[in-house]
Amino acid sequence: MQFGGDRALWLRVTAIGDWPAYDGWVWLIGYVINPTDGQASAKREVLARITGLQRSTPPLARTTRSRGV
Image (tube, rainbow, N blue to C red; front, side, top):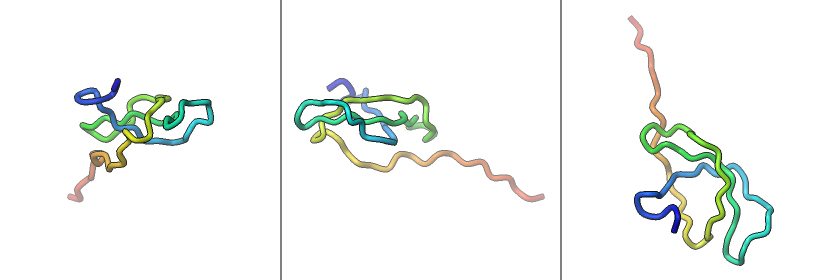
């Protein structure tokens, strides 16, 4: 509920916490991904309902390429 709708966030999960959680819930540890540029912006620990999670591919990070002259 807290991260639904326009508050949804991309989380690059780096670990699953082993802390106690309610049945059907899990602690996720990772980095919030900025949807504009694909860069990590903040580390978070989030208690999430497993059935509400969606696996997806975040936007690609912008890359800078130099051109030969």
